[in-house]
Image (cartoon, rainbow, N blue to C red; front, side, top):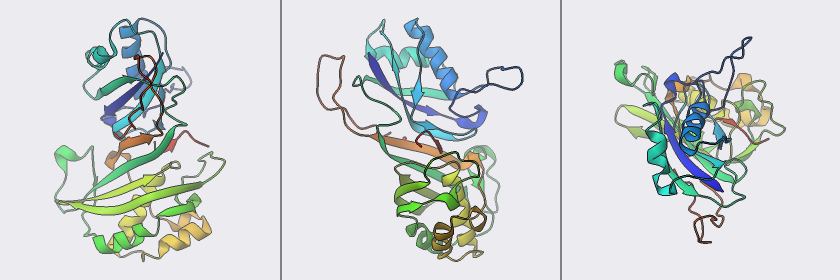
Length: 276
């Protein structure tokens, strides 16, 4: 039977979501997928493969990563999250667990994702928040940033906002919403889309920050999209400020819990995406 998890984590001490191995000794690195998969296997007492919707990079956080796995549970599904969490370190949590349709796929069934990039915009140092924000002491003009952000909305070729060597067969993506919000002394770049290229959100945030500083005009977005030239865009901001907030999946009927009712969308949400 297939199950769906919503997972939150502090990415500061992880080498990203995806399981990885150090070279040349092939020593396993500390990744979210490896840690959660190990805890799951200790609970269900059988091998399994945990598949995550987004391969977030090292240092990136999540509030709503979605993953699926197949197993025969030795306990009620309602108790699974608690059992797994008791075996997890303090920087990761399974927020929910539920039966899923047999053909539910955390990757291919994802239709919308939201990322938030936090900019600590004051001369003061973030100190206790430094692992979760990017510190920019230069004043940022939010109105200019939002004028630029609005130009990103729509279906475009986002090659100019992707890191070199992204390895995707197509760089066309749809951005449903992009805006800059004020939250106290922080500015948040919020981006929703059907998928993202490698470092795409961090490059968008870096470009909008350059617009906010007055170094770029808002119309630079049009030039970057038209040219596909990464060199025209702003810097790739550090991973620390980025958080995957939620991922929405297409509805499918549940199986394995005695019902065939509609499955709730995963509205809970890598920047290094798994789609082509």
